[in-house]
Length: 161
Image (cartoon, rainbow, N blue to C red; front, side, top):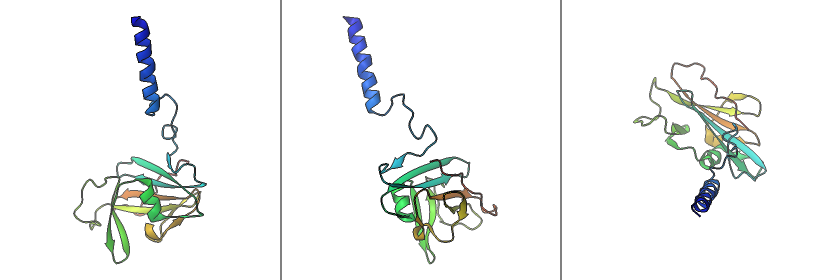
């Protein structure tokens, strides 16, 4: 009888782990692909954030229309973000908690968030702020926390689809 109780407990633990997403199947994140918000949508765009230490975070957002705005992509991605309004538009002060704290958004001679746009095959430096960018299926916004001395700013890694 005791053996049956242990077996039932083990089965229950397995079911709870599976229900919580801890089963042994390979998730998209584990296989290298980004997990998507709204995964059943017809189109996908990506956010790639590369920290100063080289760590990279990638998010995927599914969308129904032909394009998604950069502002909507960032909001839907869930990447933590702090911005400040300037005469030229919104500047990104903090992404994914980097820098950990700041007193000035764009400090002179300090690191900054360089913005790139993935066309589907290559990164291009952004020519506008992220709020003025529209992305189509398979495109991405790439952010790289860059030392002020890096010229040109290094590109983020290609999005994992």
